[in-house]
Length: 130
Image (tube, rainbow, N blue to C red; front, side, top):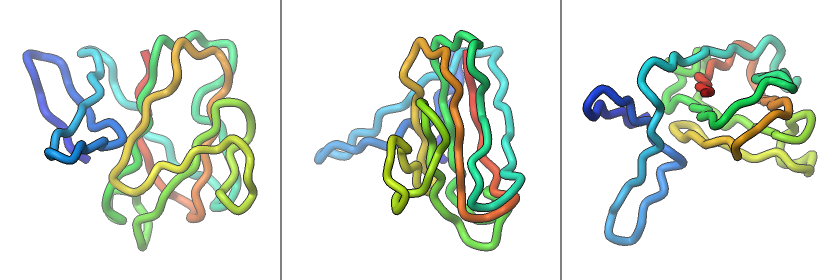
Protein backbone atom coordinates (compact mmCIF):
# COMPACT_ATOMS: atom_id res chain seq x y z
CA UNK A 1 0.00 0.00 0.00
CA UNK A 2 1.34 3.41 -0.92
CA UNK A 3 0.65 6.21 1.56
CA UNK A 4 1.82 9.80 1.47
CA UNK A 5 1.09 12.78 3.71
CA UNK A 6 0.30 16.11 2.04
CA UNK A 7 -0.33 19.16 4.23
CA UNK A 8 -2.35 17.27 6.83
CA UNK A 9 -4.34 15.21 4.37
CA UNK A 10 -3.59 11.50 4.14
CA UNK A 11 -3.55 10.16 0.60
CA UNK A 12 -4.21 6.45 0.13
CA UNK A 13 -3.46 4.55 -3.05
CA UNK A 14 -6.44 4.01 -5.31
CA UNK A 15 -6.59 0.94 -7.48
CA UNK A 16 -3.06 1.95 -8.44
CA UNK A 17 -4.02 3.03 -11.89
CA UNK A 18 -0.73 3.53 -13.70
CA UNK A 19 -0.62 5.15 -17.12
CA UNK A 20 1.98 4.17 -19.73
CA UNK A 21 4.23 7.01 -18.52
CA UNK A 22 4.15 5.66 -14.94
CA UNK A 23 1.78 8.17 -13.39
CA UNK A 24 0.02 6.90 -10.26
CA UNK A 25 -3.19 8.45 -9.01
CA UNK A 26 -4.02 8.71 -5.31
CA UNK A 27 -7.35 8.81 -3.53
CA UNK A 28 -7.38 11.46 -0.80
CA UNK A 29 -8.83 10.59 2.58
CA UNK A 30 -9.84 13.69 4.59
CA UNK A 31 -7.84 14.36 7.74
CA UNK A 32 -9.64 13.38 10.92
CA UNK A 33 -11.09 10.22 9.35
CA UNK A 34 -9.80 7.06 10.94
CA UNK A 35 -9.64 3.66 9.34
CA UNK A 36 -11.80 0.81 10.51
CA UNK A 37 -9.99 -2.52 10.56
CA UNK A 38 -12.16 -5.40 9.45
CA UNK A 39 -11.28 -9.04 10.09
CA UNK A 40 -13.07 -11.83 8.26
CA UNK A 41 -14.85 -14.02 10.82
CA UNK A 42 -15.31 -17.05 8.53
CA UNK A 43 -13.28 -17.74 5.38
CA UNK A 44 -15.41 -18.01 2.26
CA UNK A 45 -18.42 -16.34 3.91
CA UNK A 46 -19.48 -12.78 3.05
CA UNK A 47 -19.83 -10.35 5.92
CA UNK A 48 -20.97 -6.73 6.11
CA UNK A 49 -18.42 -3.94 5.97
CA UNK A 50 -20.85 -0.98 6.10
CA UNK A 51 -24.52 -1.21 7.03
CA UNK A 52 -27.42 0.09 4.92
CA UNK A 53 -29.06 3.39 5.75
CA UNK A 54 -25.88 5.13 6.85
CA UNK A 55 -25.15 7.93 4.36
CA UNK A 56 -21.55 7.84 3.15
CA UNK A 57 -20.29 10.55 0.84
CA UNK A 58 -17.36 8.34 -0.11
CA UNK A 59 -15.33 5.42 1.16
CA UNK A 60 -12.07 3.60 0.51
CA UNK A 61 -11.44 -0.11 1.03
CA UNK A 62 -7.81 -1.20 1.33
CA UNK A 63 -6.56 -4.77 0.93
CA UNK A 64 -2.98 -4.88 2.30
CA UNK A 65 -0.20 -6.12 0.04
CA UNK A 66 1.51 -8.66 2.29
CA UNK A 67 0.32 -11.79 4.05
CA UNK A 68 1.61 -10.34 7.33
CA UNK A 69 -0.48 -7.18 6.92
CA UNK A 70 -3.47 -9.28 5.86
CA UNK A 71 -2.93 -11.44 8.99
CA UNK A 72 -2.91 -14.69 6.97
CA UNK A 73 -0.36 -17.19 5.56
CA UNK A 74 -0.44 -16.04 1.89
CA UNK A 75 -1.64 -12.71 0.50
CA UNK A 76 -4.94 -12.97 -1.39
CA UNK A 77 -7.60 -10.88 -3.08
CA UNK A 78 -10.92 -9.90 -1.56
CA UNK A 79 -14.28 -9.35 -3.24
CA UNK A 80 -16.53 -6.36 -2.45
CA UNK A 81 -20.20 -5.90 -3.31
CA UNK A 82 -22.28 -2.71 -3.14
CA UNK A 83 -25.63 -4.30 -4.01
CA UNK A 84 -25.83 -7.53 -2.05
CA UNK A 85 -23.83 -10.37 -0.61
CA UNK A 86 -20.22 -10.47 -1.86
CA UNK A 87 -19.17 -13.58 -3.78
CA UNK A 88 -15.96 -14.82 -5.41
CA UNK A 89 -15.54 -14.67 -9.20
CA UNK A 90 -16.64 -18.25 -9.85
CA UNK A 91 -20.00 -17.35 -8.31
CA UNK A 92 -20.58 -14.46 -10.74
CA UNK A 93 -22.77 -11.52 -9.80
CA UNK A 94 -21.93 -7.94 -8.94
CA UNK A 95 -18.89 -8.44 -6.69
CA UNK A 96 -15.67 -6.59 -7.55
CA UNK A 97 -12.20 -8.07 -6.92
CA UNK A 98 -9.62 -6.07 -4.95
CA UNK A 99 -6.19 -7.64 -5.28
CA UNK A 100 -3.49 -7.77 -2.62
CA UNK A 101 -1.92 -4.32 -2.30
CA UNK A 102 -4.87 -2.64 -4.01
CA UNK A 103 -7.67 -0.40 -2.84
CA UNK A 104 -10.91 0.89 -4.25
CA UNK A 105 -13.31 3.78 -3.79
CA UNK A 106 -16.98 3.27 -3.17
CA UNK A 107 -19.39 4.89 -5.58
CA UNK A 108 -20.82 7.78 -3.61
CA UNK A 109 -22.98 8.95 -2.14
CA UNK A 110 -23.85 5.50 -0.89
CA UNK A 111 -26.64 4.38 1.44
CA UNK A 112 -26.67 0.64 0.66
CA UNK A 113 -24.87 -2.02 2.64
CA UNK A 114 -21.38 -3.03 1.51
CA UNK A 115 -20.21 -6.61 2.01
CA UNK A 116 -16.88 -8.33 1.47
CA UNK A 117 -15.47 -11.84 1.27
CA UNK A 118 -12.07 -13.54 1.16
CA UNK A 119 -11.02 -17.18 1.12
CA UNK A 120 -9.18 -17.20 4.45
CA UNK A 121 -10.49 -16.70 7.98
CA UNK A 122 -8.90 -13.76 9.85
CA UNK A 123 -8.08 -11.86 6.60
CA UNK A 124 -7.63 -8.22 7.66
CA UNK A 125 -8.45 -5.11 5.58
CA UNK A 126 -8.96 -1.42 6.37
CA UNK A 127 -11.97 0.64 5.32
CA UNK A 128 -12.56 4.38 5.56
CA UNK A 129 -15.82 6.21 5.08
CA UNK A 130 -16.81 9.83 5.37
